[in-house]
Length: 431
Ligand code: NIG
Ligand code: FE
Image 1 (cartoon, protein in one colour):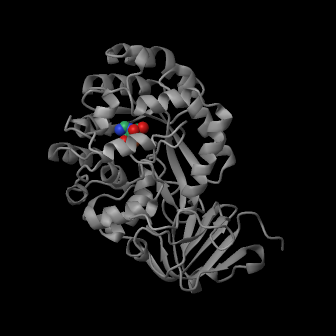
Image 2 (tube, rainbow, N blue to C red):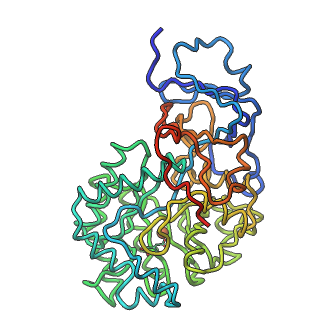
Image 3 (cartoon, helix red, strand yellow):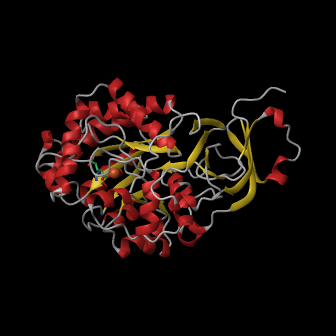
C-alpha cells in the first residue's frame, strides 16, 4: 500500500494533550486539557481521524500507509494559535525602545510623530516582495515556537494602497508558508498625517474608500480598531466596526490597553469576536464580555515591555471569560514572537495555571479567530496541526522558563519543522 501525503501516526506519547473541544473554553473549563497517557493520534490526508490511548487507536490500522513517529517520553499538543500579531511591516524601532527604557512613554513617542507613524513611513516605502521576504522569516521563527496558525493585521499603511499591500502580502504568505494566516484589516490603527487632528474624517475615508475594496477583494476576515484615548474613541470605533460588518468583516478591538475607556463594554455591545489587551478593562466590561462570548485576548509580552500592569486574567477566568494568549508581535510595543515568554509571564505574573495557559494558546486562540471548529485541539475531524515537545509533559513549557521546548511541528499531518534537522531558532533564554 502506498503511503499517502498527510497520513501520520504518532504513538506512545507520554501525554497526549487533546484540549478537546469545538468552541472556546470559558472560565473553569479552561483547566480541562483532556490529557491521555500513552496516547496516539492518527492523521489521514491532513485531518485527524483518531485520538486516544495507543492501544485503542492503532488497532486495525496498516502502519505501512502512514509516516510513524514514536513519541515515547514526549508530550504532544495541538499547534499554538497566535491570535494577535502585526507581523507585516517595514523598518524597525530599536531606538524608540531605548527611549522607552530611559523613561519616555509609548504615547509620548506616538504624540511626537514616532511610534506607529514611523512604521507607517517605512511600510509605505517597502516593496511587496521585501515585505514577503521579511514576513517569511518571522513566520519561520513562529513555526519553530510551535505556532501553526497566526493572525496578522494591516495597520502600517493607513492609506488604501498600503493597507491592501499588507493584506496581499499575508495572502501570498498564507498560500506559500506552512503557517495558516487569518487576516485582519486594522486601517484604524492610528490617524495618519494626512488626516492629523481629524479622526472622524479619516474614519469616513476608511468607510467610503477602503473598506469596500477590502470586502470586494476578500482580503480580510476581521476589522480591528485601536480604541484608545487620543486615537479612536468609542463612537468612531463603533461606526467603523458597524460599517465593516456590512462588508463581511467581523469586529475585533484593541480595547482598554492604556486607559479605561469602555472598550470591553463596546466589544460586548457589538458581539465582537474578541477584545484584545484589556489591561484597564472594567469589572462590568469583563462580565459583559463573558455573557456575550467575546474572547479576551491577552498580550502579556506587551504589558511587560511597556512596563504596564498585566491584564486581570485571574478575575476574567473566575468571572467566566474565555481567555486567549497571544504575542502581539509588532515593531513597537512588543518586538517578540516568543511563545515561551508568553507562558512565563502568564503563569508567573498573571495568576494563570499551566493548564489555562495551554488552553489560552490553543483552543481559545482558535476561538478568537472564529476557527475553534477546525483547529486548536486534537479531536477527530480537525486539521492535523500539532507539536511534539522534547519533554514528557506540557508542564515543562512554563517550567523550562523562557526556553523553547518544541521538538517537531506538524501541519496537516506533515512534519514542517524539526529541531533535530534544522538549527533551532529562538531557543535562547528569553527572560
Ligand atoms: O497592539 N496598540 C496598538 N497597536 C500595537 C502596537 C503597534 C506599534 O506600536 O507599532 C499594540 O500594542
Ligand atoms: Fe496589537
